[in-house]
Length: 451
Ligand code: NAD
Ligand code: UGA
Image 1 (cartoon, rainbow, N blue to C red):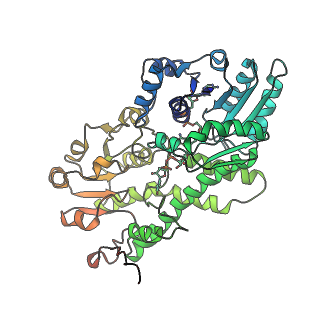
Image 2 (image 1 turned 30 degrees about the horizontal axis):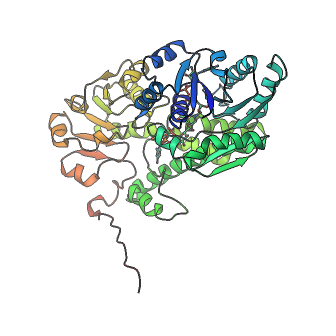
Image 3 (image 1 turned 180 degrees about the horizontal axis):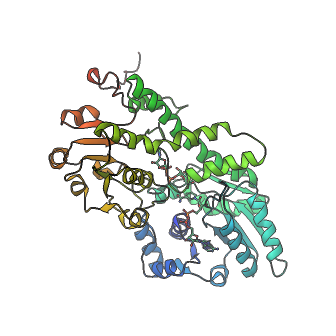
């Protein structure tokens, strides 16, 4: 059992704290947000993340996980401190490091024993060195410390399973001994551990996120070409994905990437490159392609209905992706805004994000379920692919709508089935300008082994 403190109990910090305590460590989780800490002490989660509440409850009950606002309390007796504070976009797209700086400074002023400071926040290359300088200067007296970069790769909505079953753990440091100690903490996860230098570890995180964002923009560009030429991007992606060099993941065409990570991280990486006098051509293209996805669906609504002014449009799904209530850079915000600016009345339903979404879109009427959204609506848009939208009673929906117009921003339905039900339907990249009527369902036949 090791004693670990975690600074910042947001998505990453709370999951990190809960998971390390579940692995048998003693974890003290700290935040400057008093309300957040007081709620956590009462068992109230600041975020919706499947399985998190139970995990926190179990480890609090076992005495392995506690919450505090006091750095003294958190650091006393801790051998490791994980920095998990936010690194939002600054004015020019750079990562704003004010929270990291504040955390590093306070850690330095508070530490009373040798400490391994682990940066889990996504930070620009060179930040580990800078954090080391801050701690070196702010320590009240000389005391050993080591900085390790340990970027986090979890996805919201699948955070616990991603943390517990990582594809890899990346550790960067100037001290091999410190990196080895952090590696020890991760051994129960049985994942490959990559030990490298600080800057390389920091870059692995940005390059990974940028690559995934590139796959998404790539397939969205292909979707537009499919749509014009009569091919079906969903089946194109499936056909591509069998090639292990390409892989089947992150090839879902739709409304583009949102959330608190890809948009800011691609921007920050492009900023870093430009700052060095380089031209990040691919990253710029990735952002340009992503930038028009949200308005593409609004244009389709306009096109299908012959204008949106005076119409009632329903939005199904508000969170930036399913299984979270995170509304940071959610496509639904821009889509609702454009519809309202175009003179439409907008109503919406999301299984968990409505409470958070209310603040972001005060003019949108929040409804109790998908059927209430559809009633007397002129069009319905699937914005977030929650599972519960995949098996709706579509006949009931059709009959209750004023106009049976369905826009499937995440391609969760089979176009032919929806058309057969009498909807005017548009997905994304599904060949509707082309050969839809002669559409043959793609089959995958597994060939018996040759003798
Ligand atoms: P978040 O905004 O959900 O949480 C950050 C927390 O840090 C907040 O609770 C805030 O009150 C607290 N905080 C700010 N300053 C503090 C300080 N000086 N001392 C103590 N607490 C402080 O952020 P997040 O989404 O968890 O992201 C954290 C970092 O992890 C970011 O760099 C992000 O890019 C990265 N990351 C996020 C995810 C994700 O899925 N959200 C995944 C991987 C990496
Ligand atoms: C992403 C990465 O997947 C994580 O590995 C990383 O740790 C995290 O960012 C981070 O650095 O913070 P997350 O943003 O939680 O995780 O969610 P994703 O599942 O990656 O989805 C991001 C966005 O891309 C969503 O808006 C989603 O709808 C969109 N997306 C994803 C697509 O449009 N198509 C896809 O095929 C996949």
